[in-house]
Image (cartoon, rainbow, N blue to C red; front, side):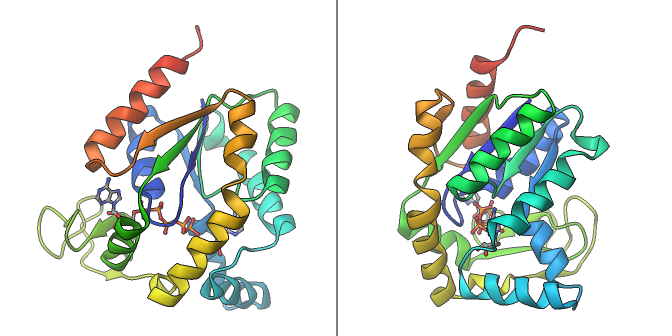
Length: 220
Ligand code: AP5
């Protein structure tokens, strides 16, 4: 199964991708996570990526397409994958179509998580994650079961993202509306776009996505 989660910053793409990865045994390809790892390397490319992300803009298509092309070739993608944060431009969407055609796969669904701007900002401003395994949490909506201890790996170290500052969030929203929202009609025309109410509770959103996936399942 190949699935894209689309939606603005804070819509819940990463949260849902983590659940779906466990539920369906799919690989989770989060370009934001990949870029944050690369940015932390301190290399020249890493510093460039860090600057672009801090500006709220998008990293160049060429870099992103190369990153995903290499990632899709890895063994854990054989059963299928969830794309979280890719594609973000029409050029990336077209390159993805080519990549999938080359490996004889098709997209099963593109799921748009709909969330209003006020909620997005509340979600982003309370977000933190495990510094060890990356599991995502929120000050109000999703605290670890034991305060200060990651539910998944037991680490007690957490971090907050640099690009979650209010001024950067506004620019990320603007980039989404200008460069990524045009992908919605692109996928709608292909009959692949499904809308999910991302304002609901996390578990309800997961159930809505599972029901879309059940309706698109191909006979085996
Ligand atoms: P990226 O890391 O992809 O950031 P984003 O798209 O802005 O999305 P977020 O990670 O902020 O939000 P999310 O939708 O995953 O929400 P989450 O689940 O965390 O990209 C960062 C940067 O990298 C970009 O700005 C760009 O510079 C660069 N980049 C990445 N990909 C690129 C590409 N393809 N091309 C070019 N550049 C690229 O949820 C948010 C919070 O809300 C969490 O705390 C969570 O616990 C909580 N929450 C989630 N769901 C719910 C719910 N239903 N109810 C209540 N709380 C919820």
